[in-house]
Image (tube, rainbow, N blue to C red):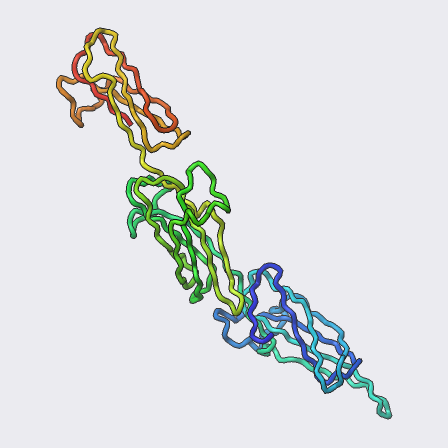
Length: 360
């Protein structure tokens, strides 16, 4: 069809429509059709197909030859279709058919004569030329920053303040070619549960962005702003649309694509309390440090370290906990949030003064 554009997705194929004039009812003819590509055609593919491109090096697929029979009188054109001609997946550019029609006629004159009638099309005939567009493709990746101009942070990210979550998309668009990108952020998903293709539902939409992009990119979309102290997974789902004639080329990714997913973790905090505020050293005193942990999820493991420093002649300050005052170090593996006891430290019978715990 004149002016058609097609997309070279897997299995794409084209047909050649040949209109033959002067073929009488019952008269046969041979149609030979060859498809060629123009190696000089470039985006936006609005130049004329090169008249010298119809050579063997540019042939697409095999030549097809068929025999046809006229169904009308010689004054009524017959229309035939030759093909199919497969289009290589991912190909982009202009293609054009070159046709030859041959008919042999035996006259009733006296003497009888055999006449060959041939017709050959011109290379690059606009009516025989199609524009083939490659399927649109993209790759995407999510990133997190603390400021508009900040560098991406490593994953997982501790949300001790408001974070900016971005989406970056790299396409196979041609320079100067435009497309519409729609990016939707979903969250927060539990950190210990895989995100599936059906997980992204309307109630979890955190933000939607629609932008027009030009060229391959990468193009940055967003950001969404997280809540301080938030915890969970955030994932982007992207769609890309390029209009081609009546049929747009589209691409989309799935919910939960690993490169599109970031994990936001709330900070781990702890509150500590010594087991004794004042104690008389009777020789059998044991000291503990009680630490209440927030920010861990159920089933999540962590290591608690508690150092005991002393003795001090007066109440210690922030810079009093130095190496030569270290009395003991304790490590405890814990799971999930809650209060834990660390220790015990058995106080020597002759020790008096202040001691202090420092935990982490």
